[in-house]
Length: 114
Image (tube, rainbow, N blue to C red; front, side, top):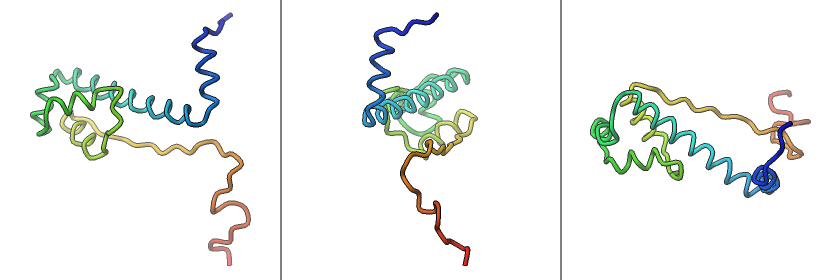
């Protein structure tokens, strides 16, 4: 039987707040990007400085990109870095579960039906 820790219970309660949930999800994405970049760089046997030279940027910029706290990733910079490492960037757009909000093309819309 898995018992929830105090932290699990606290996090569960905090995630009920929309603004907290939004910030938490953004931080999770930044953490994931940072870990993937660092892992790929290390798998290619490069230091941050060596990668920076290949990309034409500074070691500090590579360090920022690999920091879980950094949320200023641009798609163009991610592509440059990942391509220098022999990889590719894939972006997925995932819809959130539908709530009570109505989308433009929902229901009785008549786009292209007349």
